Image 1 (tube, rainbow, N blue to C red):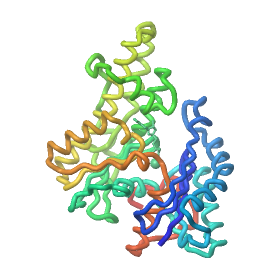
Image 2 (image 1 turned 120 degrees about the vertical axis):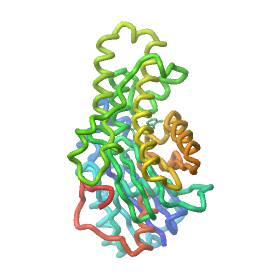
Image 3 (image 1 turned 30 degrees about the vertical axis):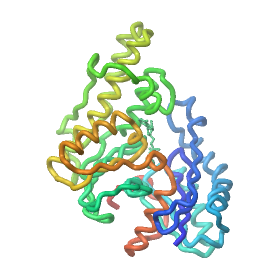
Length: 347
Ligand code: KG4
Ligand code: ZN
């Protein structure tokens, strides 16, 4: 089955064509980084207008780069949540129009479940036993820990109570005037720096999370404290930050604090749930410090680790089309009536 996937959940316009859920025939992504750079974050109105402008040509490109004609598409898959409402609407409306005009079915895809699937896409060395698996998804919009007992049986263990990890990196980079998107800029600025010179908070007041039903307060994240402490730090050290070594060490310690906050929860989840595999998805999974820390946890617990491949870490539509295929095979695909911007990963 050939599935054409569309994702317009945030600031990437993405279309992909995937055969049998595994073979990515084309994977087109237009990243709107330049459009949002001046604002230091995603502006929803600009994002949706750009999706509308870019999507038609990206669709054509995806089909022709897959070596197909429109008649070769068997199904349309589209992200219907979670995400920015006005951005989701563009992809969703377009998918519905395509499904009607091509007379093929349409599958609505949960963006976060698609990120989970991205850890299995295009992986040359997957272990024989895949489940139960613990997956950390850390992106610009979401941060959560999920235990999968099978591909479709998933349990949300914990999530962020405020900012996402990528958002903390993006805002941190803005505070330090390092550029946008902040994750890669911060990683570059931190290269060769000391991780011990300054200390930023990694913790979370558990009482803050205790009102959340269904998640484990021990496995929830909070990044607003880290960000605020960096803001106060920069106000206090405005002059010292002119020194490149001081700036490098600050970037390095801040990045270290964000990654420790992530891996600290991963370690607790490993202790509590004893999965047979560890996985990591989302844009922040591209970070070398995170990769190193996750690898050392996996070896400590003697389990295999797999990261989504760099192309499928950040938002893309190959994971959307691939996941739609799995849902279809399991008989649990559905075509929602409308977008759901606040969709939960377990919905
Ligand atoms: O998954 P993604 O494309 O978007 C969402 O679904 O939100 O992730 C984008 C996020 C941004 O916050 C970006 O700063 C972060 O991923 N990111 C990184 C790196 N590359 C992208 N963070 C840390 N290190 C990186 N190398
Ligand atoms: Zn995403």
